[in-house]
Each structure stands twice: as C-alpha cells, then as structure tokens.
Length: 383
Image 1: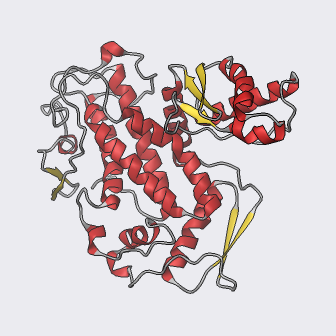
Image 2: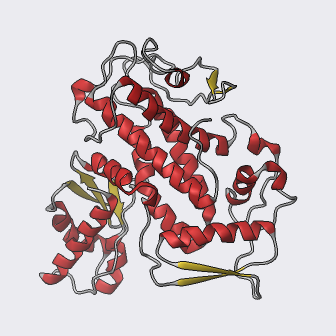
C-alpha cells in the first residue's frame, strides 16, 4: 500500500464511521499520512482524529478509538495503535515497501505530483532582484506539480521577497548559483561561495548530484551483471540477503565488468568520472560491517521516498522551494549509505534481494532527478 492509497484508506474509515453513526461530522476532502514522529510507531501516522475532534465535539483520543478498528480492518493494514493525544499509528503488511517503490518507478519524475492546488492561480509579485526571480521561477514549476498555476509579476505590493544575495551568484555557474539561492530558507541570507563547486562530502549540492549519478551507475552495473531491479517486500527473501559485507562496501566481480562498472567501486579515496578524471569519493558513516543483518539506511531511504509528495505539497503551499532542496539532501544521504549493498560482491550471484535493493536505489534516483529538475538544476548521469 502506497502513502496515497493509505490516505484513501483512512478517508474511507472516516466515511464508514460517519455512515454507521459513530461520528457526526462532515467527511474531510483529504487525509494526510506521514512517517511517525517522536513517540510514534509503525510505518505511518495520521492526525485525522485531532482534526475531527472539534467538529465531532469529542476528545481526539476518543475519535481515534472510533476510527482505529475501521482502519485496522482494511486490506494491507497489519496493526493500528493510538499514541499521544490521538495520533493513529499504522503498521502495514509486508508489501508496503514494494508498493511504494513500484509507485515511484511507474510515475517517474511525476511521482509526488497531486491536485491540492487544482484550479488555483498563485500570484507571485516579486521585486527586481536575482534571488526573488529565481525563487519565483522555481515556484512556477513546484506549484504546477500540485495542479495550480503560478503567475509572476514585478508589481507592488510585493508578496515574495527572499533575503537578497550579498553578491552576484552568476560566476558559480547555473547549477551551483541556483542551489546557492534556493537551498537556504527565504529569510536566510544565501552564501555565495566557491564551496558550492567543491566535489566533497561537505557540499550538499555535490552529494545530491553524486547520489543521482550513483543510482544510474548501479543500474548500468547491474545490467552488466545480468539483472535488473524488481521491487519485493522488505524481508520477504531472508535467505537471499548477502553474507557478511566488507566494511568499505561490496567488491563487484571485476573480471567481467566494463570500465564503467569498475568505476563504481574504485579505491576508497576516489571515484572516477566519465572522462577518467579522479574525484573525491564520499565516505558515509554507517556503511555495512560484517554480520549486519539488514541493509543500512534502507528504512531512511524508504521514509524519504514516502515523504516526498508531502514535501512538494508544503513547498507549493508555503512558497518554499528550500524544502525541496533540503529533502533532496536527506534522500541523497540515505542512498549513499545504502548503495554499498545493492550489487553482489565477490562470486555471489544476483538474488531477489539484490533486485529489490536495485529497484529501491533506482526509485531514489528518480526522486532526485525529479527534485533537481524542479529546482532547475541538472541531474548528471556521470559525475
């Protein structure tokens, strides 16, 4: 079950509770589901009971108790727990992860697009300022992902005035300049510095673009090894999990790989670009160690994918493209920590687990490509 499907499931549960007379309210148009916050549990959580408590004239916890059995009875739901003042925490069946990955791969870079602003025209009145114009240009695309239409004008009174850049960002080049202007929140002064050009782990833009390139490289290398990605429920193939992994990641079967495939597991200090130029390789804490029972960062990566649609909705609503930029960094870091377990190593044969991990990596690459495109930044196949 995908987050969108789960949202509809919760909405149907509300409707059933109204139909049988357990709640006396107007059924809302939509329900938000998100990963659980502190104190939560399960795969997703919703605050729908808190939203309905006022209209229902009942405590939120009581509303949650009414809704819980209706949600728990839905196909694909394994358990529902009420926590805090009335949050409904939902644990899905084993196919939830596969459904999410399938949804991303099927929708491609349109994953996360919705209709929350359908038919709405968002007027953006901006000053004659480089940063304001770049932010407005980006919001045109982000608003469109939610079915709305943004119109940009230079007019008073201004309703979009991010803190201007202290200097002209053009010398950074188009990609780094846009990142420098979009990554900080509108109320923060952007930092115009050559640090945005460094191919190092300390540079968030490099991590995002590098992670996208790694996702593409993993797919090419898997093809060389004779397999493709195929989503499968997490934990569905425990016997297919790889044996102990070396601390610096898997060693692919270099005897049969192309030059491009060999590049993906270069020496720990470097990676090689498509032109043969040595560039720093990111070292991410949490790479697998011998005896690790489950892939590192897998849960983080799944959560990042599931959150992406909500990030787009909030970015469009709040006129905040920085939310997209920051979420891409979260997604990239999770992928870079996960990438080491995607391909077989040594003489190991590709398994169902490898195919599922490859599909997850490809889905992450798709989200990174879509997000970078919305920001007007290129997503390289090689880096």
